[in-house]
Length: 579
Ligand SMILES: NC(=O)C1=CN([C@@H]2O[C@H](COP(=O)(O)OP(=O)(O)OC[C@H]3O[C@@H](n4cnc5c(N)ncnc54)[C@H](OP(=O)(O)O)[C@@H]3O)[C@@H](O)[C@H]2O)C=CC1
Ligand SMILES: CC(=O)C(=O)O
Ligand SMILES: [Mg+2]
Figure 1 (cartoon, rainbow, N blue to C red):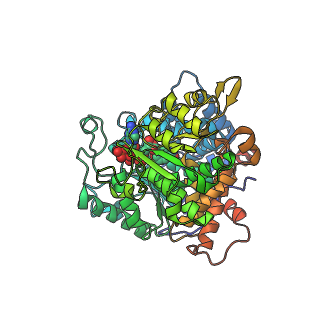
Figure 2: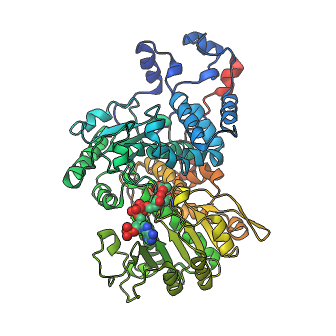
Figure 3: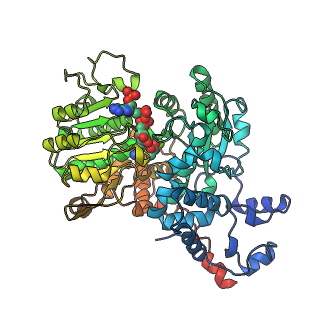
């Protein structure tokens, strides 16, 4: 069911200005016509009476169209076969900057087709070329060099005052593409687009930010068109002081908003999360969102295999923020749901970094995030992945290395020798960074593997059968985690909420999909429904675990959340009909 469009009935923090007052303010401010305010613009959807009343006659073509008509035109433009996906991404950004409702109408109704353009893989290329392609800011650019000491005042310049969801990156590790400096804002914009499209945050309540801490990629700093600070990155105390000031400013200005940390390099990501997670409503998507999404696929994968979770062996290829986040999430999930100790659960995990299997005997000094997951049971030190797979006989091989297509046929064969239907998850983004293609995974495993990639892969024909690859991307959970937390008025995002997100996502896959299609993840075309399920599960978990500040629990969490979703259908048909 599609509830009618309205501004949500949720916490209204800060200096809230209602939509109606917003329109009046915009109109009074130098009489700028409403068609130049993206979130109020309806374009050719303005009715005759609205056009007369708002002095729009002559500023628009005479035809009155529905939002459906407008979306059909946009989709016709996007489906021009001569375009590249990067050009499609540019068109969509232009629409986002001029007609927010139309952008979301098209995105929601064509999510499977447009998610790869708004998000991974195309967003990776868009970020790499942001300086050249830049047209509209689309978010906030906050500089640790020129705005330090004034972050609060600078945040106050954002025109929408009731912010509920913020995605911030410092651009230091954008997908698997490394340091992209201020160009990394593209990932914040892409994630915010999905917060709105996937779960129904109101676009006016959302805010993408890049916190410009400098950039260590010399060629970017020396690019004449680069838009960020041409400085090396801040490090050490200066860096963390800037993060502290930023977080405090967010909390002061929008005390009930949720701050999502995105694509911070591993050496900083854990430290920031630990410092902030009990101080404000926040989470790190790469560590915790990815943790929940991969745990969900792991739950379904072990169910398919008939492997008890506690008996599973998982090899991680990569031991950065995302891989360690997933390993911790699997351990937490098993501990909380299987009744085994964290230490027993950790016995399932084998982590591999660029030096090989991580053990306490390897002889190098392990950074803090790797220590917890190091093998301490006398497993021999091995460097070669094939050797490790032969030794461990894992039920799942999970790639979060950004190393590109490095998993070879002998590795996949070794995996299949140990397990009948192994999970093969090359999760690094964008597509060129994935550890193996779907085609190679299916053909080298002779159709036996259960595949999920971080970015979307096309169906593969092998031996007369068509295999549909799954997508294991945090997009299946971060919208629901954010919305669930806000709906529950949570004071923090705790482990129980991530466990609920993982279980809620796993439950969204039916037995028929699991057994019949070997699907561990829902189809991206169901993203809106799935995100609603996840949001309801997360909100309930917030209540059950005591971090919700609601006065009483709703009788039906799903209905409660559903009623508060935003839909981009602002009376389009009525406007046309009454014209
Ligand atoms: N699908 C999804 O939803 C998500 C996917 N990702 C993807 O995960 C990837 C990694 O992100 P993140 O964890 O933050 O990155 P990091 O750069 O922090 O971690 C990469 C890890 O991979 C290891 N590694 C690199 N090359 C090799 C190699 N050839 N052999 C073995 N290990 C190798 C590194 O080893 P060492 O420590 O020795 O340097 C490091 O441990 C990115 O591509 C990102 O897009 C991230 C979040 C979500
Ligand atoms: C998906 C995501 O968050 C990443 O690749 O970093
Ligand atoms: Mg990320």
